[in-house]
Structure formats: C-alpha cells, structure tokens
Length: 259
Image (tube, rainbow, N blue to C red):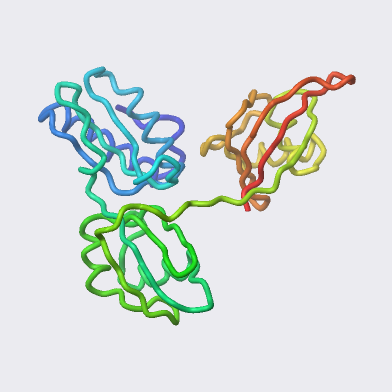
C-alpha cells in the first residue's frame, strides 16, 4: 500500500509501514499483533490505514486501558478468532502512592520516566491525583519502572502493578458560546479565536490548522459536532454542540477549549 496523502511526514510514513506490517502479519498467521502506544494523531492515522485495508477478515481495536484514554495501543487481529481480551494487551497499570503537601505533576512523572531512557511510546496515559497516581506502561517498561523508580520529584514513591485503575482522568475546558454564518473551517476558526475570516483563512493556508489531527488546507471544509481542531500558537478545541439558528440566520455553536 502506498503512503496515503494524510501521511504528512517521515514519522507518519514509518508508522504507516509499521501498521501495514502488522496487517500483513495477522493476514498470514491469524495471530493478533500489537503496536506501541500511539498518541491521538497516530491513533487517527492507524484507524484510517486499518479501515482502508482490503481484507474484511482483518479487524482492529485501539485500547489504552480505559475508554477515554488519549494514548492507545493498536491491536490487529483476524475475525477467525475472538477479539483479544483487553487484559491481554501487553501493558500494565502502575500505581504510585506518596505523601507530601505538593502534588506531583504530569511533568514530574514524565521527567523521571525519561531519565530511565524510556521512549514516550512505551508510556500510555498518566493520571495524576493527590498522593496517588496511575499510568500505563508496556510490560518491559513497567518492569524497569518497578525496579528503578523509588522517588519522583522530592517525593518517595511506592510503585505497584496489582491494582485496578481507580484514578479519574480529568480534562479542564473553557467553554466558548459562538455564532457562525456557516460550519466552514474558516468560520469556526475565526469564531473560536475571535479573528476575522481573512486572518482565519491565512492561518489555514499557512498550515497552522489541524482538524481531527490532520492538516487542513481547505477553508471551506464543513465541520461538525465532536470535531477536534488545533491552531498552532492558539491551542486545541472541540466542537461540543451545534444548536439552533439565530434571528439573523447564524448558527449557534458551543466550543470547548482545552486547558
């Protein structure tokens, strides 16, 4: 399969090659194949590649330990056998308990993990709470973390791999109530950023805008509820809802900005 147009860079092309290898392997051996942890954009790319694969007997699933996970592993498998159980994915949930007045941050955890020379692709979501946090790591990375991590930041930590996920992933948003003349990309961007249509179009044409994790170069592409978009230098947003029409014929929409 040739690299699709939505593979924007060399890293994308490497991932496409990896996923195609997984698909062909499952087609030959009928055994499930697993990727490393993928970020949201990579998950979207994986879904496109797997959906386009020309063998309806080869299925796929993205799973990161819980339904709302942002970082997930791809599993490719044959419909000849039952879908692999989520407990069989080659990663573990690690639980960290610690004491102290200052709450550890996502950055604190990442810093300690990267100090072990772990690649980001070995680590899934990190869920931080007061005095207790949980994260997902590949089996190999989990073994290293269990044996080497005893302190994060200024806190002594206890690490376990025998507890279920109980920490709650939370995402904060700022809610924007907007009205737009249409659901075109340039209208949505202009309204979310409080810019003119001309400046919005300039951002799109200059390659600063992604919609659903892929570059968007068309100002007239129609957007819809649950579409995620990001603008370089301005942040990440999601269209939460599309409401009724105002007296002036504009569309009422609600946009959430990630904090």
